[in-house]
Length: 306
Image (cartoon, rainbow, N blue to C red; front, side):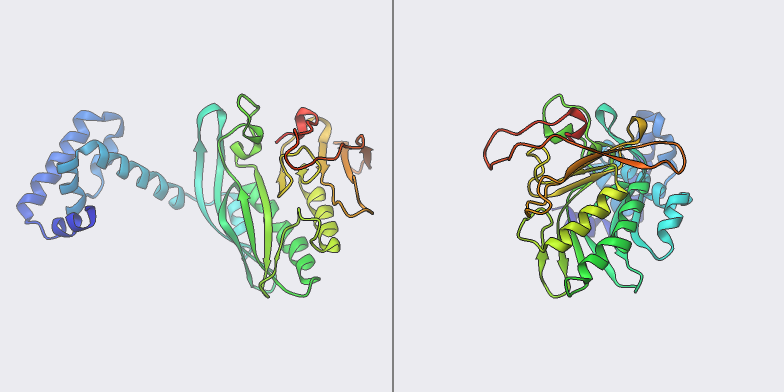
């Protein structure tokens, strides 16, 4: 019903438009002084007349949201965004996002496509909402590690299925749990990749090519501070969770059982000294209990439940 109404409004007489516009501006100034600057925005015929009918408050909401989105895109790019813009990714800057309980963060971007070194593009489906530095880490991982691993399977990388990125929630969607890194736009869940020949490879699937999964695990565990997959805690049996949480003493989690015999129970943590050139020392975790579909989740230490 709105579209025909807008069309009719676009042909309204100048007198009706002038009256509606004046009425809307006056309502904005008297009703919402904290958003006075919006009253100086350009208001065309459809917006003015719709506001006169449905009320200035609803029109103001639409105007303010549009202004915020436009402001983020018009702002000067951050250093991180400039690094991404140099032929490495296609993204939209979203600025700072906020939510209840400390959700959100600064310099958020919507990552849509990653540009490989041969100028081909890898789609992120759906686009992932991430902190810019997390998006930058994902771009480097795809360009330098994931794309070559995919090519080794005989076809070029075409798309990555994003299972989850920014979502204001607790860890594992458990009530009253600690805030997830997803709630900080600092995490990505990878469910599958698609190749140019049409094949879909799910890295959490034990039937996927072993060489590819071994290479992907080595890469993500090197680049990200948390990696959770099958065998970690029962919440990540069908996807790979990666994030860049900062922990004391450089503590890292790499928990992804490849379930292929040779690399079975290859779950390990790393403690990396903050001192320059210090060696990385592997610290093996206890042998995990097998997780059966439908069984009660095996809970690991709090740090691993993301």
